[in-house]
Length: 240
Length: 343
Picture 1 (spheres, chains in turn yellow, brown):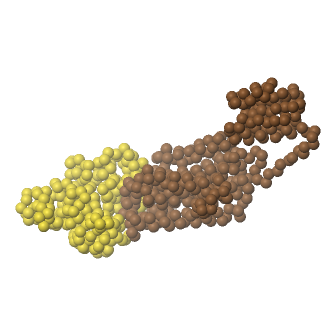
Picture 2 (cartoon, rainbow over the protein chains, first blue to last red; picture 1 turned 135 degrees about the vertical axis):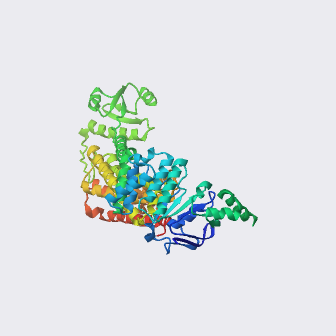
Picture 3 (spheres, each protein chain N blue to C red; picture 1 turned 120 degrees about the horizontal axis):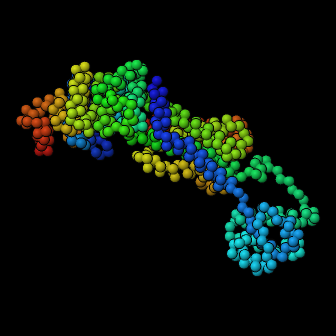
């Protein structure tokens, strides 16, 4: 077990964004957080990387309580917005982020080549980010998060704005990372992407309404797709 | 080294953004040049009418300092003044003027005219034994223009203004584009971010300070009695306070427009308390504002060096105040980053 979320609630003023969430994520799995926008997915993952603190409850990563500076190096985080310096080239962006993690020149060069290969941007290494398309920026952000080979990757909507072919190749990249023993937490609101995760957490209006493998969720609700399952759980939620 | 990476990145961004670089380096020079031209423009040449002046007097008074027009009668001269063909006229009775009439609508013209009349009187009646006065100046001279007096303040002000705006907006962009969070989800410490910014921007700030000071003094010929190094040092320290204040206030703005809104609130009032207007004339209930603004100390120090020709002893206290402001703002910056990451 690599992530343990214990009784976590989060309030902004009177607005309760997360309501008593309990969740454990295992080492080496791809865990999907599925829910409509505004459900609280981003707030939850931001707590996991230490950018927010819960109002109640605790988050433990690698058995240590977040936020913690020691843990940050073991996490790779990709936010929903492309946190890139558009005046700089892709290479300069990655060089900068790599230096922040204390990588030496040779290792930096090697890792930049590797991650750019993975996101299929090797031909655009020296191009300015301002000349990148939306999808290319998304992929570059992903590359930046992978740069320091973190054990745990937290990716907030990593494939938004990426075409189906490339999405396929990025997911095969995720499976490669998983094969190397990395853990991935991926938020999404795309149902067919959810099918690709090992386990799913369904979030709706700040509540974790169900956790399980896509198969489990489907059989429990007697539905043929994750989408139907989600609606079934959501319906129960409303009925109560 | 993480700070080095941050500094290199800021330099690269700057060099890529030529327009911002130009704004920081060239715009202050442009404004200083304009102010120089505005304040030190040629002095006004009064247009004077002479009524019934003897030919000898006419000859004596004729010079480049004035434009003389002869009138036969007071009526004709009055009409000329009403038409604003002349600024005023002297009515002569024999070789001595007995009456002065001014058109009078523009005070600066009146001043120029009166000044000329004072000189004319001396020329016309040296025989009456008037003393020739020699006038000495402790600071400045007869040639000292308004620009020389305002200059040091303006120099400081524009250094402050441009650094504040550019550093504030740069840091704000880092906040709004999500890159600040990216930095905070790396092992970078909060103080390292602030120090990195101070160093990275500091390089350009230093360049700007040198350029403005050099240009104002050696190209525009601003009065300079003291040592150039001190001027540089003061400008640099002032720019540091602008840099740290800009990044700090960016925490309280949600977008670039809101950052610009700090100009009338934070920047312009400092201008009034920087010694441009004599502080003794400002109401007591307002004058306490002066000593809490960085520009107040910088302007005083710059005048000590540039106008009064003093040295380190005179500016030491002011320099400490500026350094203190910077240190305070750096500390508050680190605190403000807690909003994004609590450790």
